[in-house]
Length: 565
Image 1 (cartoon, rainbow, N blue to C red):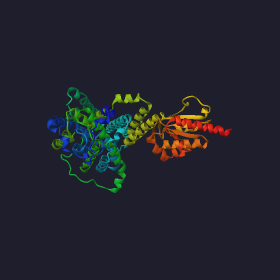
Image 2: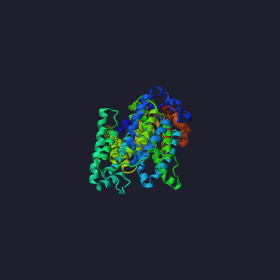
Image 3: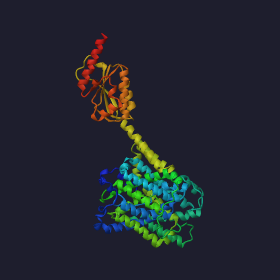
Image 4: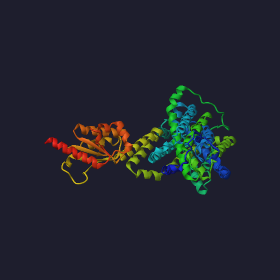
């Protein structure tokens, strides 16, 4: 999963379809299914394959979030259909994901299971709003090291979340909401007898997941492993704890209980969920568009579709949904060409719980823990990690800090801090391109030229470089005239323009005449509004070419010397 993620970060945004300009572009159209008459067989097979793969993941992620296996299945079915129809990708598969589990688990621990549906509804509305406001391409600002750190942190968190299910099952012990602390608590109070059987279950599932694809890529290793462990648990007197009863049909849709005090408390968590849903879904859609020739994706429509999917899941008692990279990859590799495959995947899950909910309820939790542990390990792209750690110190720092904060504190905070660190590094690098160079006057030297300083301002002049450039210019002495060459200035912001104003004013206060040459047309309005041009001693001290500026400076020196005689 991480490998696909990191690969797509380098993809050009040209891989996306050019979005339609009208508001109608955010909603389904018949053109979404133009390939269906030719691809329905491969779509049907892909949907069946993904449905089987998605079953253990939906169960496992539902349980790990604290919302329960039922919530995971409901989300995979309801959100899977809605996102397939309304989303902006032709082959995206949506449902509960590991990243969402990381965010939801603390919410469930603090506010209870009943808050999940309300959070799903609130977050879904926020994601829809992001799509309507055309914020779909904002995910492209997240740097690759931050994405990889984010992914590594999620993988570690998912793995640690399974430790209590392996050490002693659910023995009623109150565990910390921090996954690291909770894992340590469960290890210090483990049940040796339970641990032995659980490790056997995990090993069986892991071996099946590793070996099955080598035999045939279509073999669902996780499902085979779960079946073997379940049969073992039924035949032998093991202490392994099963999932427990799950419904054999979908519940009736209901509006979640809305308590305005609770809504206020959940506002920030819901916003966190919304950001995660947007980031995860858009990254997954980008992966899908780069994996095969299945058309691009419309990021704004994808946000609308994912938001509606979470709203729909909330009405049925489910949890927030996102695009699932691993399931989407299976979908594409199984031959999916249209949205029909994703719809079939959801219908397959519906048929499974309707027909075999009894056997599903007997699946040991340790088996699902094994599935999620292997999934977490597969999320880690060691090649990408080593590439980042061997790159620059700043990128390595952003990667490590993002991963650490994801595990130790909060996922979205980790992304924000990672982006901030990366931004600071980029700004620092750009600011180093800003420079002030004193040049000799061109042509034959004239007496008094030593009293004229010709300064060339290079690179961007913005808030990160303004003070350094200000110090370089204001510190000049033993001159009577300073010519500021500005034709090489690139980006200039308000802070940079204000610094130029201070440079001019500071030099003029010391009796040094300032001449400005070569202001770009793009900078004139900013210089005029901020006061750079007003700071000049005379409006004729603004020049378009260097020879006239130098001649004016020499004339000033001659007049100054004449006045001294």
